[in-house]
Amino acid sequence: MRLKHCHNTSDFRALARQRLPSPIFHYIDGAADDESTLKRNTEAYSNCDLVPNVLRGAEQVDLSTRVMGLDLDIPLFLSPTALQCLFHHEGEMAVGKAAEQFGTLFGLSSLGTTSIEDIGSTIKTPKLFQLYVHKDKGLTRNMIDRCKAANFDAMALTVDTAVGGNRERDLVTGFTVPPRLTVKSLLSFVSHPTWALNYFLHGGFKLPQLENYVSEGSSIPLSIANYFNTMLDQSMDWQAAEEIARYWGKPFVLKGIMSVDDARKAADIGAAAIMISNHGGRQLDGSRSPFDQLAEIVDATGDRIDVICDGGIQRGTHVLKALSLGAKACSGGRLYLYALAAAGSAGVHKALANLCSEMERDMKLMGCKNISELNRSNLRFR
Image (tube, rainbow, N blue to C red; front, side, top):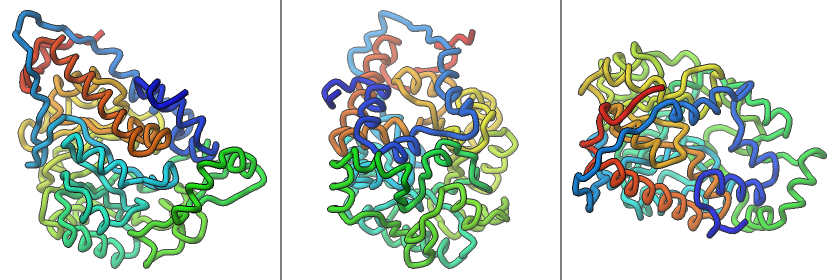
């Protein structure tokens, strides 16, 4: 398969599988336990049907939206994800450039492989930083201060990683960060020489947000689950979240909200937005999908907070369904990570172009000229 034949997320996934060593592909592709929540994240959209209107003169379509006070050209943005230079040597820079080209938000992770400063000075689109609160308070404060200096626009505190999920594929493949060669994984790395050559010629692995503070996961190999279990602050509570929001002083987001009670608390502490998310099914297996939770959270919070539906997005129609239920925007990770792994910046650009074409075409077929015209009258649940 070649990039020109990638018309959807499934196609990018197939090409990524060809080009990545097995442990790295399965890190992107896998989830927790039986992976039932991973499957449900996308399947949930199939239980909801669109009801189009016709003869509405929808020749021109406006996909723009406003989230957290930030103007975006499209209602879909690229969730922050870890370790991107492992998937392709262009990493976060490629993803950020694609977001810039499409006028949407780009998210950088605490476990990103490109520095806050490099992204801040290079990527001109709105930027969000995903914060993991570490036991080392100096590290956490340092990342926030660096984001302030680099003029990031928003900060998302990830709140669903009190412990690492049971990602059994990683246990089977022996995936660690940095990658550790084992007898089991060696053959897969050797059989993907292009990936290996690019990986080593472009500087190997680094975690520039962390490397001056911790060795685990930066120079000492560690699984992601063990990193969460040993390095992150499991005592974090609502008071701590509020203190971080106050110290940050710009639009603040809680990523990983799944309940109505927590959505209300997020509004109470002054968050500008929440990302309804189950971490792509990688944490608590058996939990609800973001789309399944969307309506009740929107109804409970009203206009107090912007609601973002994160996870399971594979089609433009998925975005339209979430917007019709009241989401201000959608976001996702795998939808662009497969594309990044498949073809670097060209892959991410094509993935976004595909989805934008789908959203524009589907809006015309729905008889909607802008996203404010999407509402629940457009939907029926089975």
